[in-house]
Amino acid sequence: MRLFIGILGLLLCCGTPAAGAAPAFHPDKPVRLVVPFPPGGGTDSFARILGDKLSRMWGQQIVVENRSGAQGSIGTAHAAKMSADGYSLLLAHQGVFTVNPHIYKDTGFDSFKDFEPVSRATQQPFALVARPDVPVQTLAGLVDLAKKKPGKLTYGTSSSAPQLTIELLKNATDIKMLHVGYKGASPALLDILAGNIDLLVANPASISQYVKSGKLKALVLFGPDRLDEVLPGAPTAAEAGFPDLGKMPEWYGVVVPAGTPSDVVSALNADIHEALADADVQKRVRALGFVPSPSSPQAFGQQIRRDYDSWGEVAKRAGLSVEQ
Image 1 (cartoon, helix red, strand yellow):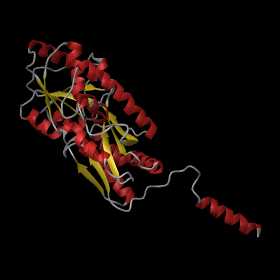
Image 2: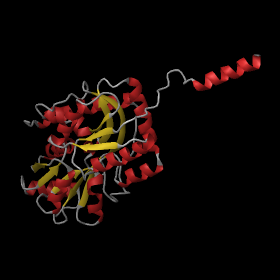
Image 3: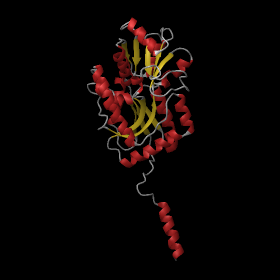
Image 4: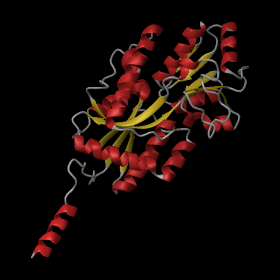
């Protein structure tokens, strides 16, 4: 009798989840992953790698939904209104969450009230590249050229954080360059490759193949670390003599609409950690020039707030405001 009771107790113990453990998220229908930029760029490439891995883990399709416009605000505002049940995810972007609210009159979303952070996913520098015929090889050389030709050089961006990074450069060096905004990395790349703009600030995933082929040249990385795997030899901002331009690297993360249950957020966080730890995922993500960097929901939320405040100060100093 004692043996039976002992075995029964053991079975009950093994079959009961540990107190406080988050239940696994087991979708029984497709999950939407909104990407607030068009297909073809680094954001989209990363989303599809992550979505493919999660799809295989869950046994359910991940539908990547590209909704571009207003430097990521349109897709982000759309995601804020989706179902708060774990079946609606947004690939959050640093510029959209922490810069757009400071420069657009109405983004259509609130970075803090409308979303629950799940996990940071990657963290990497922006890269500044130039056409081969632009007669500079370094960031210092670019500054000298811009002083000789005030307002003549053009630079493109597809999100607001790189735009503000160049505003920092312009303010620090008293140079003038003309900004050209794009809805995504792909149209910006087409324009610089066609010779329509001189410079482009983008994530490494978008431009690495063109740098390797000699169609573009990398001048600097706006972050604390080199990316010699994808952009060999490209210096960091500190190495180029402009340390203040590398303090806030780009990041991607996953968020869900506000009101999503906390246990679902915890389960999603665990699954994203597992997905990004996969060797094949690591290889594919790093080949794009991204650095897998998952976090807890709390740490990701703190980073969003910290960057939001810091970029707000930059936008105010730059006097940058865009009517939407």
